[in-house]
Image (tube, rainbow, N blue to C red; front, side, top):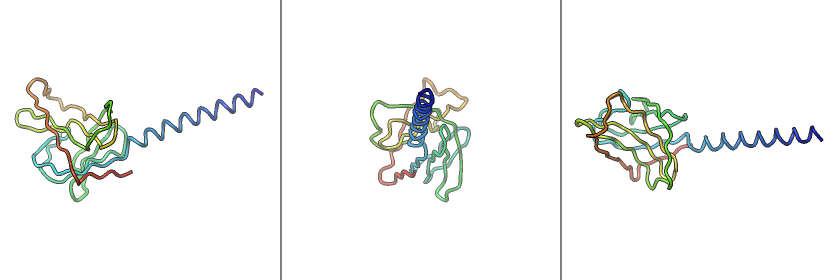
Length: 142
């Protein structure tokens, strides 16, 4: 009887861990393709205008790739949540002193997004928010 109880506990623990892994996998592995018409920063890297893919293959890390697929920048992130799924995929920027800084990434239909860690300068009071919403050029990849 004791063996049956222990076996049941281990099975339930395994199912719990498996559901956590599956849940994590659903939030990681997305790609958002977008055309950004202005120069911007991703972390400490200054990036020229152009076609980019923002890729999240690991939790709390996003990579920006150019149109040729070359990595141009990477940044650490923290997960953020919304009470409703994102209506569109979008990248959000703040603008301070004429410079755009990538701050958030959302994928259409997801409750979770990613907030990039802020650069060392604090954009607090004078920052404006700006969003880029890709229309037909959004791609989600597993």
